[in-house]
Image (tube, rainbow, N blue to C red; front, top):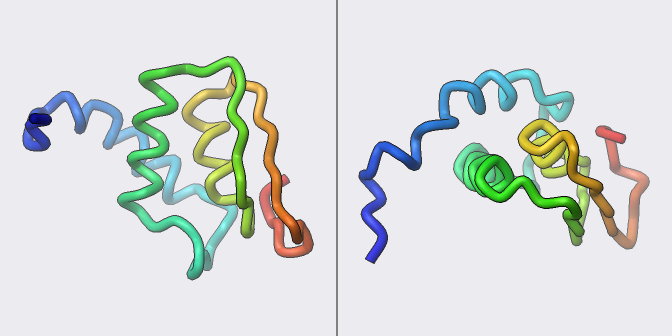
Length: 88
């Protein structure tokens, strides 16, 4: 069982808040909120993957979070409609 109160899960929270506040996506209803964004940021920081395949871009908020957490990762972002994409 994973102990969610463990402080190790909070180790990137302070830096993430700054990233989240500076997001170019001001209004993201229909997309990721704070909690899901932090989880994504945490996983990317821990894994530092060489390649990330993102399915569903919406406005680009998750792309921004992934790139902020793991700037050396190659990101392939897929969506059926990229017309709403703000972060490119």
